[in-house]
Image (tube, rainbow, N blue to C red):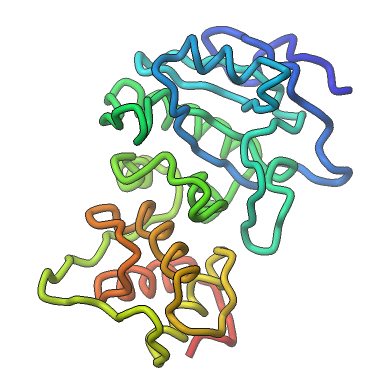
Length: 261
């Protein structure tokens, strides 16, 4: 078993709260992704308790409290149990491929709140430190909802992804304005726009078959995309705003994929 953390990996850490819920990363794997979560619990003490109890079988590398304190629970060299069943860009063992940060917020069930500026500044500083040390690409700074669409919705539509990108964390383009008169496509639609969105989402990294109709599964992935990149209305609706934002995001990433016309 991997040893419990004995010293912080970052100078930004305020304290250690070791979790036993760890194991070695899969052989040959190193952190190439940074996954951001919210705790979904009422306070940081409750979060630390859950994330360090063997019976809960969850953990993370870092917790960032509302006051900006950074608590490390798992050494970066170890595999924490934060992502669960997940996928990104062909990788299914996200825990072995990532570092996980839990951000204290009660979440949607317990009264979802804005993320305080002091907390966001701490997340930004910690993320920049991790990204620099592990050479993590902006496209691989992700929400839990990106890697587990439908199963997870955190850190949610109030999280400041655009602000983080302005400060060197993650990949972002300004979302296209929403046209309230645009109803979007109806479920079951099969057209060039559906084919293109499926191909773009798959190329960017989301788990989706490039072929098929605008069905409930596709709607779930579209909503996950919106929770990160078009937060004003994360309803899963395939409208012009979503297509335009997604197109420019993929173009800005420099990704090339022969499925994209």
